[in-house]
Image (cartoon, rainbow, N blue to C red; front, top):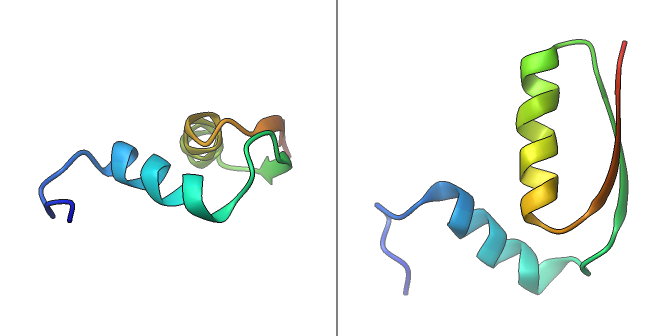
Amino acid sequence: MASMGGDPRQMMEDAAEDKFPEGLRVLAVDDDSVCLKVLEDLLRGCKYHRESLET
C-alpha cells in the first residue's frame, strides 16, 4: 500500500497505468496557460500522445 505522503505525480502515474492504455491520444484545450501546462505534465507522465491548444 502506498503511503499518503508519497509523491503525487508518481501516485498518479501508478494509478493511471492500471486504468488507461499507454499511447492514448488526448486533445487538451484551455484558456488558462498554467492549467494547460499542469494538464500537459500529467498526460506526459501517463505516456499519452497529446495536442494542446490555448484559446
